[in-house]
Amino acid sequence: MTLKTIVRGKVSGKVVKSNQPINFLGSVDKKTGEVTDQKHDLFGKKIAGSILVFPNGIGSSVGAYTIYSLKSNNSAPAAMACQKADLTVASGCALANIPLFILSPDEYDNMKDGDEVSLG
Amino acid sequence: MELTKDEEKSLNGEHGEALQTAYRILSATGEATDAEKLVPIHWAHVSGVNYNTIGDAGEEFLAGLSKNAKFRVRTTVNPMGYDKDSVEKFGLDENFIQKQESIRASYKKMGVTPSFSCIPYEVYDMPQEGTQVAFAETNAAIYANSVGKLKTNKESAFSALASAITGKSPYSDLRKDDSPTMSIAMKVSDPNELTFGLLGYFAGKVADKSVAISGVKNLDKRCNKSLCASMGTSGTCGKFVLDDNSGASEKVDFDEKEMQKVYDELNTAESGDLITLGSPQLGLEEMNDLASMLKGRAFKKRCLIFCPRPIQEQARHLGYAGQLESAGCELLSDCCTCLTPLVTKKDVDSVTTNSIKGAYYLKNSNGLDVNLKPLSEIVRDETS
Image 1 (cartoon, chains in turn purple, cyan):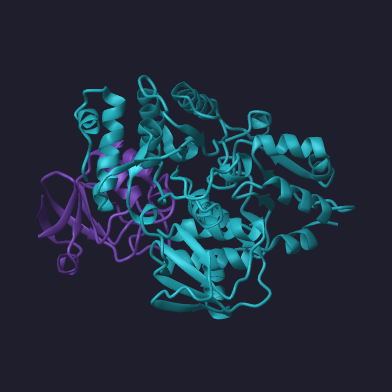
Image 2 (image 1 turned 90 degrees about the horizontal axis):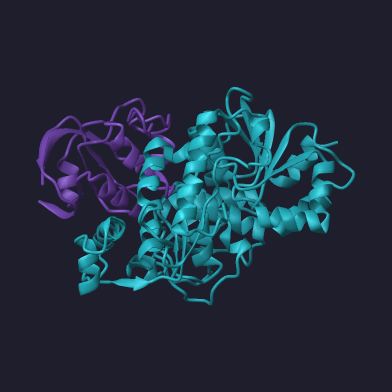
């Protein structure tokens, strides 16, 4: 069970999981949805259409626009699921209408990269 | 989160699309932070102004929103992409300028104070301690909480924009309880602004929302700004206190070894092709200080200095601007090192700066290598 739903929606898809927080502004290409930060464990991966599972957003407040842009460019994840909510991810997903869930610690740990899951 | 009847109506669209959008954002951020209610805020500082960062989707969103949105509280804005007085020197294309001017026009239509600054706390009078504000720019939010003793969460571009339109923000997190949960012991001796930048980046990574720093008595403005900016870059932490006895349960050390780790992560060049100063933008005190350091010297390379427009005007009046220009500096207003479209791989491979925040985004967003040095060493090595 998810702990909390921040933006509602029913989605199924393949999990792309990172154990590192994401600064959307500095790390994700807003046009292609590719992770461009060489130091990030998702470097080179595309997050479009995925269930993006990561601890939380960090850094720039403008990351909310990056999330919105991803959606406008058809490169956004189908949903995001985090350990804890931060204002950048919550507001970006709210405006872009990307379902956003906060997972319980167990659920977070059990979700593996590549899993097919349904949320919402 | 509990909404009043009127807020509920706004969320349901009864007061128009703009307010509905704003309340949708605040409902999500309120839910995310377990807020029970919204509280009035008295100043919003909005990010998401630079076309380089928000792109076409952002430009179109703001153009649409501005058709029926009005700011209800004083709203200042972050830097945009360029300084109109020198834009022709930088070879930006027509499309960039057109889109940036559209963004400027959208904010103007909504009633913005056209600050184009990431240091509103040095340009405008600060409200009294304890005042609730909504600052998106991360260095400004942390500075407002930690130095200005105001109350803000580390807002996002959209949550601050929603607060500007509604005059409200969820009552949660740092607005409610800002006591530090971690204490970092500063163990590096003879620190300068770069050291505090490295400390801030470390603190952002390890701390949650509020952090105590022990072993530091007081900080000058340059060190304070450096600490705020780097802390905002690496994490979610929105406040620090200098306190040797905070009572925070978790304790960690920041020593030479930790400092070197952060430095090695961010410093990727031995020297830079160009120097940038100002991320955050420089204030009047820093301009004066730099002018004194440069007396009788001149930069051997191009040196860009970013500062707010009213600060540049005051610096011109007081003679500092002229002194800096005589030493080879180029002064730019309304824009910043951070996420600048003016310094690109087309022209340079590497940049020298004393800003950790600048270094992070020059590397990750502009794809440039960065040589990090404190200001005193930049002056020593790069001027004659």
